Length: 433
Ligand code: HEC
Image (cartoon, rainbow, N blue to C red; front, side):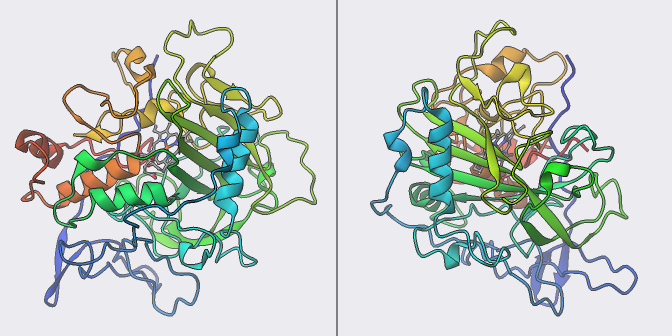
């Protein structure tokens, strides 16, 4: 079987001198007199400064929302409600997932859609963003911190969809996860991947938005819309020079959840996803719109390594009320944006340094990507496991590739060199084109 590679091409990032400050060249094109965002000055992402919020500064005259990276990582996590603990993930997967969603929503949903999911405004609990996602052409934009994700090919979202559309996302970790991010990145110039162990009770949640309009994907009617500084067209912007960024509306399509839960014996993690409007052909109540109009697609706690390719999967539960155009490989869980030849846990099990190959290709032994790898073990022996966190992987790879001179003290020099030189920089679900 052929697998579309999810790996991205190496970032073509030039360094430009701006007065005394050195800046990473981002989007400095000018087209038709339009104001284009300027690259971030390097008073951030250095060993002695905070992490950058985004790849570029807000465009001139911008008065809308501005993303601030939530980087006040706590040293210990406060005691907090964990409503999913009362539910059995194996026998009550739908309720389990819903309870994590409610926890994520608390304090994050505001009357203003644009101000929703801004950790600085949440008075219920802290949520934190992973650093160093602001690099390369897919890096964080300035309005909501969205990174570019995989392109949706025609009919992947809905049978009516005739065109391709781009997707963008932003992820958050709760305080337990924030503690680990803070430890790994305690020294901004010398991160320590040995500490990438997410504690029990970690929740990571990710909002995915699409540029697809409602006439192409009817179940998106009433979906929360964010403004974002995203590419006008689809496809890799390095291959399509006319594909430049501008402020556009994007619509909520998918919400991803990952929970560190030791009751999940296979891997230590539970992954689940929601689709806005219930997906193709779903008879949703037209009166229900907004953030709450999302439906669980399914939950997985393992990759069903011995699955004979037909019959019931034992470690994925799919919601019978939702009829997706596709899920993952052989029916394992994946979301609408995701590569149908992968699964949530397959791709995330590759989180390691040097970076693992996220999806099998060509003559690869597919079964390697559908093992149940316990938390704390790497995908490839001898590498450093990053506990299913691909945002830690993306950030660490971005950091090391930006600094070919830096060798973190906790990593063998040969491995650091491999990351410095690795030309198959993956760095997001993007990359199909
Ligand atoms: C083919 C690869 C791939 C697949 C499949 C995939 N992801 Fe991810 N995911 C990523 C990458 C890369 C990141 C980090 C960069 C980013 O946020 O885009 C990520 C980030 C996340 C995050 C933020 C925390 C973290 O671990 O970095 C969550 C939560 C998440 N994904 C959940 C899911 C869920 C749930 C599914 C299945 C419905 C899924 N993912 C499927 C590649 C994948």
